[in-house]
Length: 219
Image: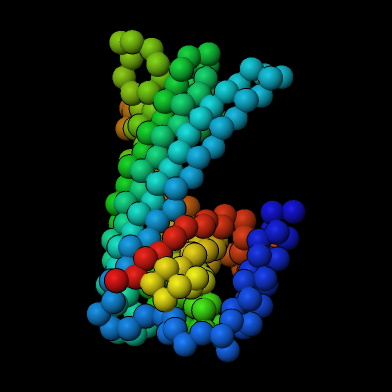
């Protein structure tokens, strides 16, 4: 259902953009020297009365970029998030069940974005390659115990869409990565490094699995 709704939204936006082309003289898109800021903010809340499991969390992902040419931009990003609940799971094991457990994460990275396709005047399609370094801290809510940290590096090549509602404001759609790699390790004794590589070969079915929405402002 989620993928169906997102696909319908994309089709509606494309149809609307074509209908608006003859009604405006505004120019949509980017040029060399443009600067943009972009970001998405998400919240989630869970309350399972069957298991009495509750959790609340948020994530914030701001970006800023500079266009080296009309089609190519480079930039930097931050990733901040936090979740609070009763249980925490590490490597399939429930840790500190019943306590107020808090998970907080922070990361920073760089990216390069290339715009290669226009669908009408307002819809711009891009591919983006990014590398980021991050750390997640698990606080088990028990005094006198050490917090557990997970440190890692992630890299990915994905697709994105921008729909311009005005010449300097666009709605952004970040779709699933085509290719991704991650390497992570917990900081407790005996922990081993875990590496993972994924290639999204079934593109049409998996595009909207991890879709993210945000806003972009061009200067």
